[in-house]
Length: 129
Image 1 (tube, rainbow, N blue to C red):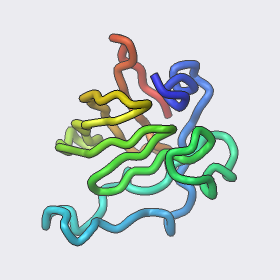
Image 2 (tube, rainbow, N blue to C red):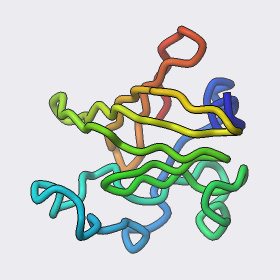
Image 3 (cartoon, rainbow, N blue to C red):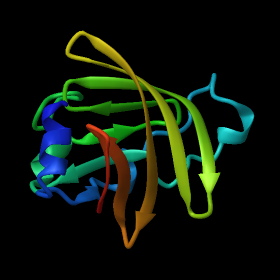
Image 4 (cartoon, rainbow, N blue to C red):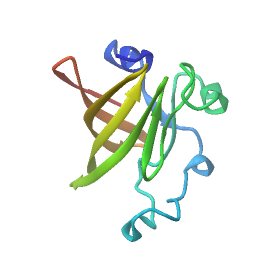
């Protein structure tokens, strides 16, 4: 479990978007249906807004979603599939962190300006807002 997931698990974090300007447009090689980025695309910080200025993938940095990737604390994930479930989106991820590769799923949704993530950590499903 990476440092960011550990803090989420402990219930310490609420993820708020850095600024709308931090949202990344879909890359030119993204599927045509991705021309309008989903609501979860952008930089999301917990606690201190200074995290928005931190280097991507640093332990104290923001969680970053683009149309095709997710960058967390010391991890990078390729979004292999994004499936809408009402207002939420289920992401099928191929992740690499601390020299290990894993396949993960998470459900993301923006609620009241905060990113709600539902993840499974060590077999236990947890939601964070």
